[in-house]
Image (spheres, rainbow, N blue to C red):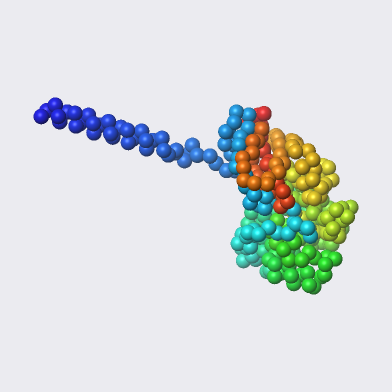
Length: 298
């Protein structure tokens, strides 16, 4: 009887220990879980010198580098309207700039990026920024198109405003082509991920007249490369296709940008390690941007 009881106790102890071991290996403490910072995804480190990610055809039509113009409409399924909020009704988002009227809508993400930029401009004495338009739904775009005509406005579904990545920026001092605010943005907005979308010398490429007020968010390092090489978005996306990979350094960070054509769901191998972002081009592929900080090294 004692022998039987002793064996039962041993079995119970073994079972308890096995249960604890399984539980301990099935969940990680919060501090061990990957963290996402500044929109970049942590390197999954699947390969020693790079990593592998799954891409799908749907990813072609998502991200900050989407080309929206008369030939490339807003992709189906984009729900920028759910992210856009009234700036007037959310005054905490109005920080360092003014708003033309209560119809201006913008995502908190873009409002925050714009605010950081204009606060730096204020340090240089340039501080009279106004936002006159941000996100526009298709009904608003239809009204604008009908009022201004095809020479000035794009039809609904073919405007960057419909995906919430663009802003019409003005100045309380003067028209933007002459205002200090317009000149400051042309010189400095690239540092914050913004670009002048329709420059005067690129109308043959963009198909849109010069709009010194229309700025588009594309993110770093893309805005820096576009500024350095004097490229608009159409040209930049073609440039990435031609080069396949581009690298640049901004401050202490090194960026590497890779273009991958996508015709089906599959895996792609990225040859370097670091925090990364993926954006589609709204055409035929995705752009993977890898950031390596000074702490990470090469």
